[in-house]
Image (cartoon, rainbow, N blue to C red; front, side, top):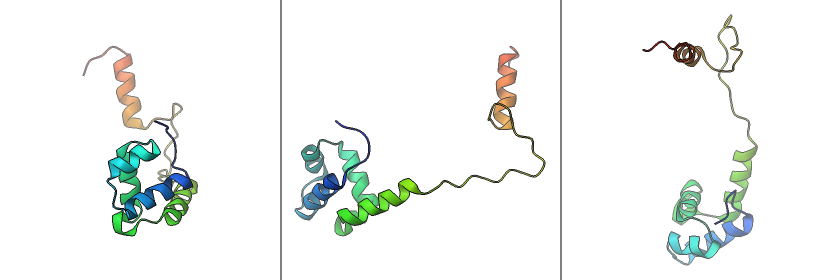
Length: 101
């Protein structure tokens, strides 16, 4: 089964299958995708009564291209050289030094 994002054509096949009243498993078999992928796609984009392939594809493109928000750093907090937060760094260094908890 292929991985990666659904194509516009696959979304159109899903919309057609939903409109015809096919089970998600049958739609998944027809497009060679896992049933969970089809179920998630339909539920994320309007449910069985409101799924539209073009709207779903546009929404997915929007979700793909949006930037993720990062939490602001506390003023005066030094950045960690290894990229981890303080709690993880402290735990890791304790484990590396051979001391047990």
